[in-house]
Length: 170
Ligand SMILES: [Fe+2]
Image (cartoon, rainbow, N blue to C red; front, side):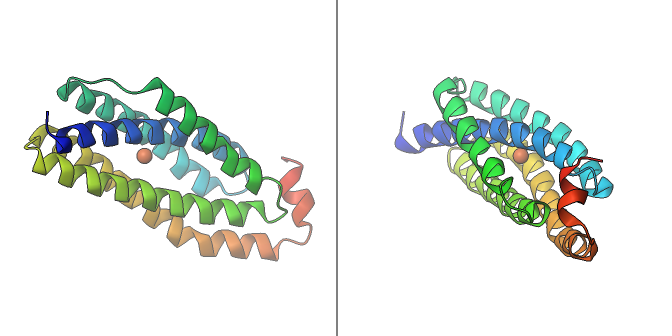
């Protein structure tokens, strides 16, 4: 097996771990976005998309005669938990969450761009197709978040009792 095949397999495992962390984070984010129903609804849709993306990566790994790495999955999920916990300590949590989430979606989209090219160079057409489907979803989510940073910032800044509004969960 040449290096590029091994690298493609490792990148698929990295992406599998990335999606596991994404699913954990989205489940938490939806809870924190109750004052932004449009963003929360879009996240519910993306949660379903992320579960599909995880499945596609599992299929892609199968095509490489490989499996996800439970070590990578666990480490990335733990690392993924740190970011919302840090953001949760700040009063301006909703705005910071949007910034972090938009950056993370862009990172996911970039990961699929790299995977598609690696798959192409390894002659893995089916993996290219699977990753292309996920790339479209990641780019759409990144665009949505970017467009909504403005709205979330406005709503947050215009509310008089920010702390109470966002922390009572009402
Ligand atoms: Fe994703």
